[in-house]
Amino acid sequence: MNPLLDFITQPLGYAFMVRGLIATLLTGIVCATVGSYVVLRGMAFFGDALAHAMLPGIAIGYLVSGGAREPVFWWALLTAVLSSVGIGWISRSAQVREDTAIGIVFAGMFALGIALISTVRNYTTDLTHFLFGNVLGVGPRDLLLIGAFGGVILLLIFFFYKEFLVLSFDPLLAATLRLPARSLEYLLLILIALTIVVSLQTVGVALMVAMLVTPAATAYLVTKRLPIMMALAAGIASISGIIGLYLSFYLSISSGAAIVLTATAFFLLVWLFKRLSDMRTQRSAVGN
Amino acid sequence: MQIIKNLPQQTLPIHHAAHIPGTPILKANNLGVQYNHFIALARVTFELNVGEQVAVVGPNGAGKSTLFKVIAGVLQPSSGSVKIAGQGPRGHICIAYVPQRSLVDWRFPVSVADVVMMGRIGKLGFFRWPKSRDWQLVHQSLELVGLDNLSGRQINELSGGQQQRMFIARALAQEAELMLLDEPFTGLDIVSQREILKILETLQQRGVTVLASTHDLQIAQESFDRILLLNHKMIGFGVPGEVLSTGRLLEAYGGHLHLINEAGATIALGDTCCDGDGNDESLA
Image 1 (cartoon, each protein chain N blue to C red):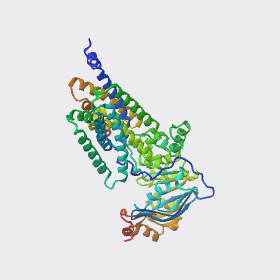
Image 2: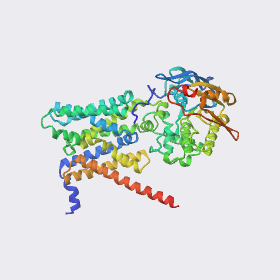
Image 3: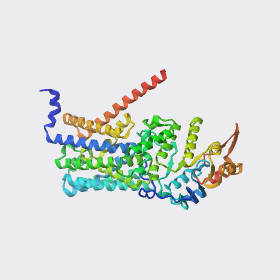
Image 4: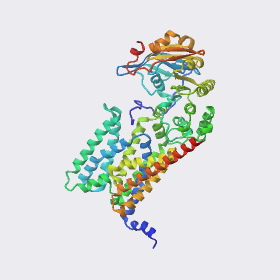
């Protein structure tokens, strides 16, 4: 037997690994596409805050269902949509600086979530799953939900491509062109919220922002076209997901952490490579 | 990060308000804008005829951008009214606002043609992709400003003058009849400024009405039909010779105005006005 082939196929003998891989690929593609807007619009903090602010919803779903996963998904969905609209509203009408307001809300919500979960005895294992993900625990039904919602998110990003582009590049143009700017803005916030819910089982709330930001930022280093940036980011996220899961399988490390570390390594590599090539072009320009 | 902050209070569905014939393209009547207790604009009254080119002159922070936003229908005036071809500004997409270059994210991953195509979006509507006619208009607009050979470049690779011309091409692709150019000459070298002025001539031949804010009194005097002198309130509106009198300029720029006569050119050096309630310093 070929040892390399063995290395690749052995984990695929386990159904949970196959489901985990599919979930990772799906969420990676969705996160990277939506994350391109997060990176370009400077919304990394918003994404991070939104992911953390979902914890109370997750906690309620967990408490009312006694640990079943599907109610957790729906409760997380509800909280995420409410939080995204709420944070959007705060950013518009807050008396304090916008990032301060987001910081207050997100830490408060996160604390509430932890408080709720801590009412259950032996809560640490479950809390860890919510915080850092449990992609190997993805069931067939979870996969269905991830696929359905991921598909809807990608379709909406595709259909509203030109509107989101104008809104992100030049909000004033969007306003003079009579686009329903505010509704589109909320739609984008809700799409980010849905993306986070869909990715919950893969990386968990604490590492979510990495899935949104790191692959998109890596792609942004090498391309100056938005569609290519989205496609590249999706590719980087997928490869990071696969490598991360294999690392997790063979080295027995947390799957969410392994995926994020792989994506981070990709970013560092590309960044370093770009720095070196920029320096070389600069030097040759000086040499002339 | 700005999530929703800077968007207008309400947005209307896309539609094209009919022009009422015989009315001026722009009519501002006793316009005023007030933020809390700060008066940004007061008593601004003027009319523009079709094809006219008017320079808006005044110190920094005099309310030039505020005036443009009100005309574009993005900002609601606290008092007075704006009529575009006889109707309120909100019903029109024939107005193009050309932003200051300094306020644009030039690292945004789009090409020159992508940006110009954004001007077509108001006409396209939802769920429609640009057709060959839209691309044709984009390339014609780029040709008119002399950028067609750069249409595939990333916007960051353009020079300042080229960036400005790209935005004018976007306004052309929008089929705008009224263009609001926010500081189109600022930060450009003489050659680039001349290129913009040449494009303005072409616009005039096409019957496009232009309102452009500028600090350059010489450009305002030589290249524009009329001048609107502004420092929160309207100080003068009329032909350059009439409006650009030393007395009026002193009123607009206050004690900070330095008129320098050099090689036949007059340059006004205003202060960078305070962001408080402007008049106190400028009238000191």
